[in-house]
Image (cartoon, rainbow, N blue to C red):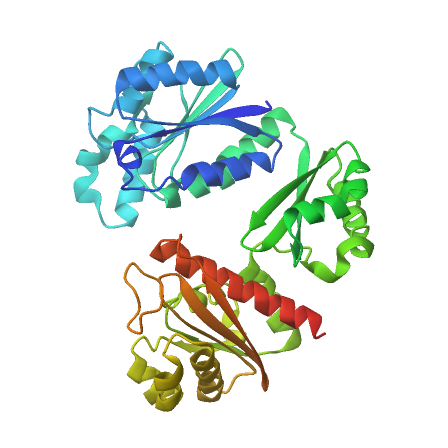
Length: 417
């Protein structure tokens, strides 16, 4: 059991109204136990389409996982497609019905049990994995050594089914290898230059280790993946190889454990007992959202403010009106005064500020779309940066700028050890 195919079922995915986050999650979980996803299909909820896609999927991989298309009505097309594909019939499963009944009663919804009773009808050849967070069960079918799992489409139902039931089942059934991964985050070196510098190290990696370059913003993540039978040996192997990187690019490495930049920042702030605050205009709270996405962020994040209107920058952050008049609100000088005012307002060691034009229209002072100034203030020292990214839409602009600011802050903190 080495290869898998994922099938996402639902017109809402095809129309763009709903984003398919399930496939990314499932592919990651499978990768962690040594199963590679070879292809992902997104299809409509039609019986013949589902059957044809199942046929194609089993020609590619030995494991097929479908999400979506399972509902409480008798015309559920996914179940019918499964039954027809595996030459089976659908019938009431007593165990699944009792589970459904208990699920409804615990939530005070027993009056709608009859309307959801159809969820307990499953293909007779299937093995049922009960859903503890919804009404549609997961059905496993096995044929000629190949497996299919059919899950509901709601992400908060998919995740526990995969993590708590399907992954443990696959590991136990197929005695899969351990897969261990480490991420080394490198900043300040273009990807092509970095590849040249570490080429000899990369070529000397043991056969069971694989390296991937993952650029994100101006950071390059080096993902090292090791596979084998002994987890402790793999972890030691990864650590030894990472240590060999330090003589080559050590001054550019900002983390070797965490993946997300906001988690890397959180560890630094916690370790050094530093506090931080934000004053955001063009990023609209995205910085604060990223920083507070970490559990335990209340230890270091004291607060944030979104002074969107110019007068609020002046009124709350004490930005000088004279500075605004002379340099415009989207300027290096205003970003600096915003950061200083924010630091004083929340009494933090570190403050971050942004002022710019996210689009789609020009700013009130005529600055071009995609222009942003941001200041990073640590104690009584600040650094101000300018970016110009007219090609990004509003959402991507806010996210990229926030990622970049946190990355720059991490680099500053690492270098002032």
